[in-house]
Image 1 (tube, one colour):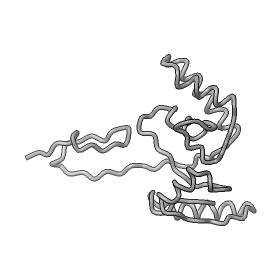
Image 2: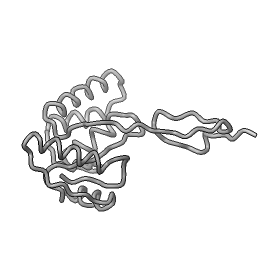
Image 3: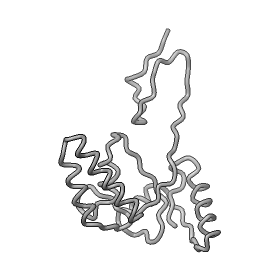
Image 4: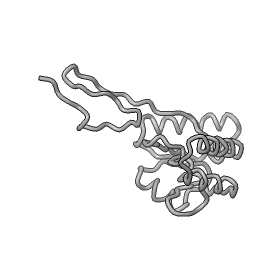
Length: 157
């Protein structure tokens, strides 16, 4: 299993725990750790075979920013590190990103989610919770998109 080390909280420990659990299930795991930039270069060049322990964020909170780059088979702006290919999914991804009708998009991305669930090209394990420090002199509200913008903060007296 190929994993990034030092990018996310407890990433090494989580990868080791996952490898241990797979071992209990009878799956032999050869765990390899990479610095983030090296991992991305290898993944983008499709040079990581077998299991990949990765993370993905979506600051715009739009399903397209998760599903299209990770699961679209080929094309511009895709990552698809696993080489997963599904023509019906590709068609739905193109349809989803080309409509502005909210009800139609919801239906399309529900179908996309079902296909990804059934084919299981990825296993979604956990979400990292953001932790913020506070100070009574700082006025600021955390954003739902995880962005921390200094221009949205003010300092009292």
